[in-house]
Image (cartoon, rainbow, N blue to C red; front, side, top):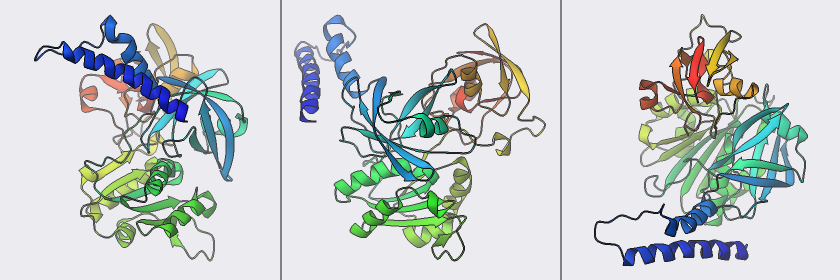
Length: 390
């Protein structure tokens, strides 16, 4: 680990020498052209060490968390792991049945380790998660992007009183943040409300209980929506009453929410009832909805099994109305960039030349894209024949 830090500092040191040399000869008001040949290599090395576009990750260990969940502990094969912010994710690339696809997974381990942990839960009708849980074994090598995402604690604006709302596998980015907070002796006060369907689905339950017991600055409550008989714990959903019971009043608090789409639909109105201000709510979207036909604004006349023709870069493919356009492209060998698969990162930004698509209202598509005919293929569903350009 020390050798890795020294190497990184040397690369950054070269970058610093370039900057200092340039500043000595820089005239007032003159900018720095980092693309010139003199500086290009030092800048490239520094940026690549800190923000690699792709990484090769070897499975060093597989940890069984719950009957439906495993944590894959990964080390990097092609360099050092870059620094990241607790709460960020990587996008994992896999080839399944000759289909190249990807899925984002939050890092559940804290920064500063020689490995990263990705915690994966099985889900009904899933494609990538079942493959990872059943097929991937210790020693296998996977490809991913570098760490990315904006779901992390920002000390300049988030304050010192945080409320985390997690649902199901949405606990994973919070684990990275909480483990980091514990290492720093809890500089922030944190309340975690963690909702799960069944008691056996609660990931990291024992560790969370230990962290709460060890510090008065961390309060943990689990809520079970489908409890067993004679269950004495908290039941139901994370509503305004429950939030107030454990977090107090909304004033001076920042709220983080991560979980399935149904959780956003329920919890966001409850946070409004509680008095949380919209700009004090941070969200981490977890992929497209399980059933897009149940989303607000879906045209009821369009059946999810309806097939449409999509002309893309001079080629015709078929796309099902109830499936994200990106999935249809991948299934038929059309490679499109993708990172978050939730409509936020814009990596799969696609020009819609002809036709109509549906995009769920809670996705992170920019208003400018909507106005100028760009769609995000990962959260776009065809409602007619389409012509697109990638």
